[in-house]
Image (cartoon, rainbow over all chains, first blue to last red):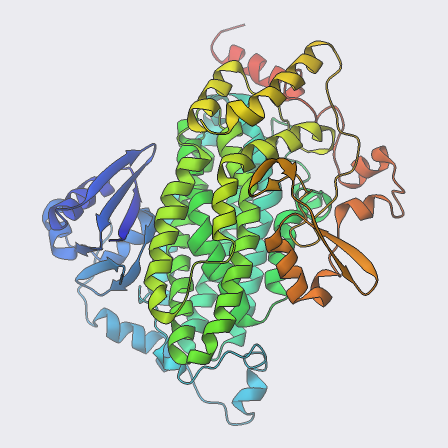
Length: 89
Length: 506
């Protein structure tokens, strides 16, 4: 199965977001590299607004991800509640 | 960041619809074909432009909000870097060569991409595509500006940064990215999308921006990691646009498949050639290395590119034609390129050097099949010549590939001991190539590539007439300052002296 990934800058904004991603995607592997964190998940990954909000304790707009996003891989689908990356193979 | 999130009145999908498609209109004074004259001739058939949708559903209002936030973050760090002698925090002044190459060869490419997307935002009839292309155009100009701005702090102290615009136009190693972008810009709109949106953004920028920038962080370069990640955050959107565009073309009409496949083959190879320099920066120019070019290729090329082509297989797309040759070159290309740069370093506006023993150990660990066997002996020979006071400079002019414009320094895919050279005769003239991939690209469109501006030929034309000093003047290279071996350079002396001052009261 192909792997999707998302890489975020390593900073205070992304720490709870990474925790939320790992909580929602139990098969995630977290690779910590200088200044960045790359999260790999086999097949597909879903990032949920609600889980991030639980971790950061405030309302969150998933488009805020843009600010600390470094790169990603997979077909994207985004609406106000979730952000999904998926390979169809 | 403490950003206020307003209560949502519209869903993301509704907002996207209102702020993109609903802004479009049908023309009445002129026909659609007259308004969008370039979307037919490449042969791509589109039946319904409304089927194209940005999966991020990013609208202009959000775009400005988030881009402004990225800029604020960027400038806070750039200011801190300038105010706190950030240039002295880098691991080693040799690292500056990577930044000089970046500024001379890569930042102008960002600007070229900005011009290209501005044009595509006008040429595509679909509103969703127009809006996404406009955003990307602004992004690319932002990248060029932030890179030039960040690196201007190094220009205050070090050589080789001062004339990047002249280098972009005239320097032999800069014509490689320049010809890539000129080729894309002089293509039709759909081919441009494959060239930049797909091959460059999706398949290649990860290799350029992610491990290299993480490496910049490891090397204490706050300014570069900041512009790199800031740019790559936009690239994530660009990659998605590129992937959506390719899926859109393939879904609209089955007749598009062979055209798209041909462009994937062409632009993968052109991009791969461009990456030779990135591999060299990673393997040789980061004093502290994060990962080797080979390791980066395994993650972002083999694994991620492989996933992408498996995903597209449902449309009938196969991996690009040069894929296997690329894989065969990975363990050789950075070494061959660095050896070439070293031999011609009288003609580069950055320094190169012979790797230290410690670095050669690292290279031999990362390239167990190739480094000790093929490349360590050459470096050992160059070291011996240098120690004897007769450092090697290759004063011969390399034969350039008519397509990618790299000197023919790479070897045969199946024989790392012989240089790969191909030639084609066209209208009574002989043209040279570095690889089968570049030869095929030429043979598909010879009338385009016979017009290529080649730097070595320029050297023999007026006003230079083959004079090396006149050439240096013409490319704005200051001999003895910008060029040559790092060992003994002004950059080396200044960095050591200033760092010493920074840690003492002398």
